Length: 300
Ligand code: ADP
Image 1: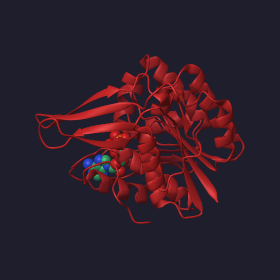
Image 2: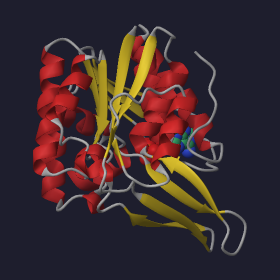
Image 3: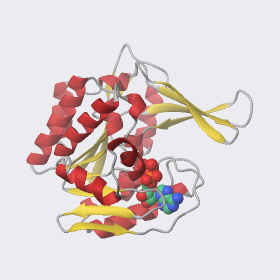
């Protein structure tokens, strides 16, 4: 059995259900979404594990149950006696979604605080995946604890992947964000950025400039996601771009996360980068055309 390990934060999501004070409860998080799609797409000789820290609150057991129901392993999930899981609410105002967050003191902020737990999880993993959001919520020591293990895992021949998933508001400064994301690229075989945000925060003039920057930072294979635009791919064979058919979006939540899960599952299953990219886009374009982040996919 091989293991795909995804590391990050799951939050409670409240979304307005009808009018007034009715709210629907869900669970969400970028690395959770990617784990979910990896589980849907990977062959059955792969186990998917999620590493996070949950809290001492009524929702944490329900998150564990949700993961188990989704066939995602929970053995690397710690429980914090004095904290609770983070929460956010989505409200629809004049057709626009607005978000409010309560995550500053979430249990997941301490997910990298137990070195023995991290060592066990990394040692048992054939693929390790994390994102810029995972790093953003941690202390500097936590960031370094994850990145140094990612670098070691990659040097030891394990597969590793990173999505910078830029969220400037989660970081103490734009410079800190750029510094830590660039450092994480040293540990990433696969680097899966999204062009719109990268162009804004790293000043990339083109998809290929974005891909080249991440290669220079240490990644081996860069796939630049790009909304409904052409997708960039840079690996040992050089740079090429793949045009895609634009879909009118219904709900773009989870598009990039589903792309990552589909791409990595295909690559781990032996697909070429080109065919993994097409499979990933096929999944992501279906996610864009459906409400919600988690949309059923058939094994490819
Ligand atoms: P993120 O969700 O990280 O912001 P993007 O918006 O770049 O990522 O979208 C990720 C991927 O989802 C794209 O590379 C593409 O494959 C697919 N996608 C997103 N929006 C569309 C669209 N309007 N039409 C077709 N595919 C899309």
